[in-house]
Image 1 (cartoon, helix red, strand yellow):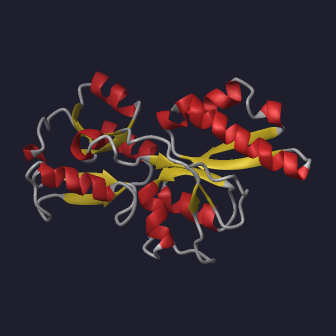
Image 2 (cartoon, rainbow, N blue to C red):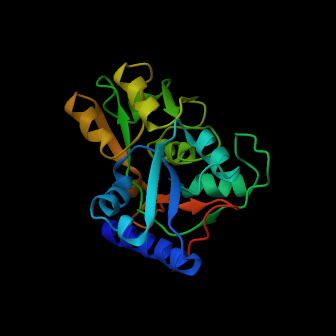
Length: 230
């Protein structure tokens, strides 16, 4: 799927360029994580350059900055959770925006590289009772995934606390400093955490099945008009 996504992305942009007859610098805002591999592969293999495209990647500190910047046309494309796109298009995003959201998801990227990772002293979901866990934003993205995973593990709302901490880099850093009991991490961050004695208690795929939609690239209303993939 990774190379296919990168190739489709490059070819779709190439079609746009062929129609316009000019080269293009494309601004893409992403979270840190292994789901960016198709873009890195396309860059390294020259798929973009061979088709007159220069892709600039920017790491976002969190979903609020990412979605606000995309909606306000500071970036052409984003790699983000489908939950974020739905929330902002439905007027439920936490960041205030200066224009009405009009986001379009171009294609699916993966089925969720999410792992629930906890500090070494927490080895079960039950042990999270009364503890604080971190999320990117409280009403978008994977906060709902985390809540559902905790519910499936036998915890009820009010038996734990969710704290906003920003994107995966910030949450990983907080976890490594034992500031909170756990968080959802994206691959490959859970590998580094587990090597340091932290526990991986479950994954979104295990909790919801293989059809769960993870990361998708949406475009903003005034961004590059990429052909929509089926």
